[in-house]
Amino acid sequence: MTTFERAFSDTEKAADSTLNAVKSTERLAKALQKAAKEGNINAIKKACSNLKDALGSLNQTVTNAVETWPFKDDEEEAYLRERYSKELQNTASEEGLKIHDEGDGRLIAYPSIVHVLPGDRTVRIDRKKVTTLRPSRLTGILKEKQKKPPRFKPDVFLEALHKTYLLISRERTATLPVNDKAGPVKLLVEIYEALTLLPDSGREYDRTEFAKGIYLLDVAKTTLRTKKGARVSFPSSTGTKRAKDTFHFVGSDGNRVTYSGIQFFRGA
Image 1 (cartoon, helix red, strand yellow):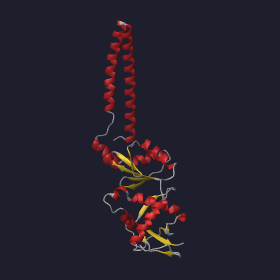
Image 2 (cartoon, rainbow, N blue to C red; image 1 turned 30 degrees about the vertical axis):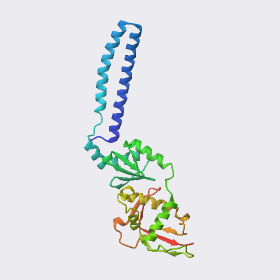
Image 3 (cartoon, one colour; image 1 turned 180 degrees about the vertical axis):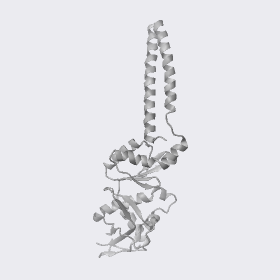
Image 4 (cartoon, rainbow, N blue to C red; image 1 turned 90 degrees about the vertical axis):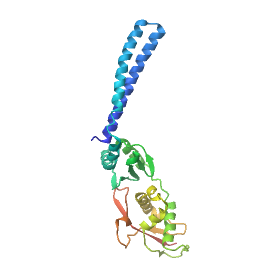
């Protein structure tokens, strides 16, 4: 089976050939129009003969174009599910872009998260659906995104984490402290599950997206405090290290980082 890049390239070339055939036919039609305006019978007959030949060529070119795309519906979906991620990684690597496969159709090209959606014939980049599937074009989009800072509001995310942390820790009455008292270490998975209690919210805000927020907050945490003056830390949890209790992301340096616990220090 061919690759998506080759299929898109062949289809583009077939479309180019069709456009050229259309332009050629248009020129001949204009020649017929001119002959009729001038009343030139010989030119009319010649233009009609040429136009008839061109029409046959155009029909064949159009037929070739519409038959160029090689994938059937089920083959498209299967390719997107089984082979597309690897092709995108290879194409990106040739362009100097590193893409990490997180499994289940999720890819990280810092700072972007790419989720392949086979049934929709789309990808989702940072929670926004994108119809571009041609690997070379999608690579270009991801490289452009690397040139811009991540769209992230650390202060808003920090407040959401803190409020959820207080609820889980049963510390709703916590006030601005006067010392550096540490709160309990809680599992990040508890925070995530609380933030995604609504139906389908976990699908819209998946674990990788949450891990990205934690990473970006971790990078900026030395300068951030909540409105109550608390600062955050992400220690390793002392609990059982089940896979579902950990969150992974790939940072700007290309290294994989893992998070499992969260703790707030109610310091001044």
